[in-house]
Amino acid sequence: MRILMVTSEVFPFAKTGGLADVASALSRELKRMGHDVRILMPRYYHIDRASLRKRDEALGIWLGRGEEWTAVYESELPGDGVPVYFLDHERYYGRDGIYGARPDEGFKDNAARFALLSRGAFQFCRMLHWIPDVIHCHDWPSAPACYLLKKEERWREFGKTLGVLTIHNLGYQGVFSLEDALYLQRESDRFNLSGLEFAGALNFLKAGIICADEITTVSPTYAGEICRPEYGFGLDGLLTYRRSDLTGILNGADYSDWNPETDRFLAPDNYSLDSIAGKARVKKKLQARLGLPVDSKVPLVGVVTRLVEQKGVVELFAPVQGALYSICRDMAVQFAVLGSGEKWCEDELEHLNSRLGNLAYYRGYNEELSHYIQGGSDFCLMPSRYEPCGLSQIYSLAYGSLPIARATGGLVDTVENYDQSAGRGTGFLFNDLSPHVLYQVLGWVMDTWYNRRDHIRRMRRIAMKKRFLWETSAQAYLGVYEKGLTKIKGTSPGRVRV
Image (tube, rainbow, N blue to C red; front, top):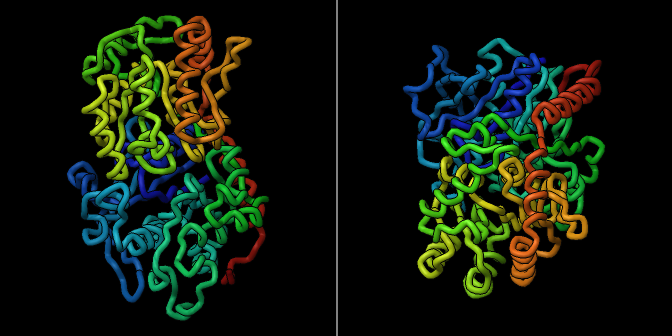
């Protein structure tokens, strides 16, 4: 099967969150299964051209009122040869940042930037003389490719190509001025906003949801949640209408990168289920590195996250009302926090870092430190308002760092709640999200740590045995592809009105 992944980020070339890991790992697994998988993404400013190979052909892409010309570079995912192609356009991509100069501020021309990626996918395939069986789009930045496939390209070379959209996070929809619709329309359709307009604005994700042949999201629980008003961000009615085409597929984990037994960042203190002593050494080194008191008896809670409202940062970190200050003041516990996002939250964590001797905060993202926090923590805290899947808790389980997580989305699908009577489970789940509840939950965890250490040890062993394999996830995606291709088989290509 020929599969084109169209995405705004792919690890290790560009990453802001789990999307980059998923696009990379899923592509690798599908290639390992024998499929012809290729990835298309923008060449952002930080991706060095010198590390890539430039193709001879330039690519002309119609955008709005004229044609934009891009160069195309290529490389491979490290270690397995999955081809990665980069659209190179200096005006749209030659700047710092993927979506914006800051995590909480998008570029004003993002509609044009990612319409170029979506339109460019079809011109790119023509350039290669390679027409995929599946165009797999990820989140709002490439969702318009599903719209363009159904609206324009089905009557051309792509009459038998399946359009699949994966929703990694419904909270980000790509909402722009209606004037930007010109980037996705032909001149003859300029005044027809069917499929593009939502609540008086242009909505990239809505266009993809309406026009994708198949829709997936990244956990079974989240697939049900987004059809309800409290999680649907206004699109729950549309998703309910398309429920028969919506499949929840739990993300896997790339255990070649996230495995305490082989993790290069932890060496020489790697550890495993049967040889756990290295974890204690990693914890001591992490405490020393972050300036925390080196004490094996005090539990260390890791937080590796984007500092945005979705992740529960208001209830945890907010000045005065947030739970973290009281927890650190009242409990014998340490926190190691790594992340960036909303400026108020970064500034507050800097302030708490200066006041509290049992809190350490690293502003920004550091791949090595994220591995070290996973390895050296006793627990990892994930108080998400909603969590489509989440990879951090899957990594935490593998590293024996028990998740403390809100019972939502993929967190429910991957973490087994602690049963105190049996002394079993793989983490600590809670339902409500408030500073008061967070304080109580941490008290519950501390009580277990100090009074039931045999339970902690048993839970750690159960957690480290868990495996969420990309082979299983990839098989499920192949099932979606085959289902969709069967549906469009036998249909005659032609203009489709949406």
